[in-house]
View 1 (cartoon, rainbow, N blue to C red):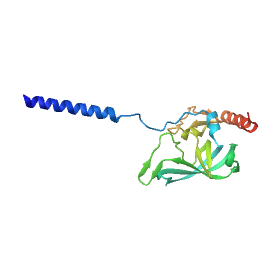
View 2: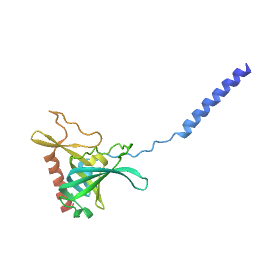
View 3: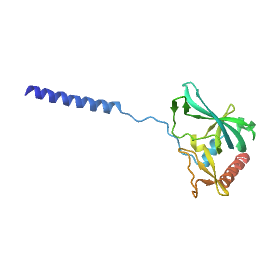
View 4: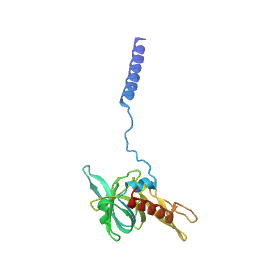
Length: 193
């Protein structure tokens, strides 16, 4: 009988210890939260607003922590807006668009929110410019993929999964409307408030 009581006490103490550690050990989750930006917010944070064509990509380790990054070689097709040091960028320039993540050998670093950019893509992008390299504003939110649908060209957001297009689908926004919206923002930025 004493043995059964000691076993019951030991189990009770064990459950209490586990419960105590789970309560003391838990805290708020720590993660990066990416705010959602509309086009006005993307524009206000961008050094450049461009139309680009994507060439080959190279994956490498970079930065103080040696994270895997992918550098996409891009050609500037059209400039909608430039400010600061980015004023030196010209149509026809070749730049490197860097994103965190990629595949290096049999090691893959996948980051939620990066744009699934591929060679041959044409993109409308909102980017920061640093030392000849560009970075998407708001991660994948800063990239819009050109999608031809009949006689019309639409752009679809690249935040998350790659937009799929099947015959008859209407995906994204009319490119002409996006261009007009950015044109108005760029004119306001030149004139000032």
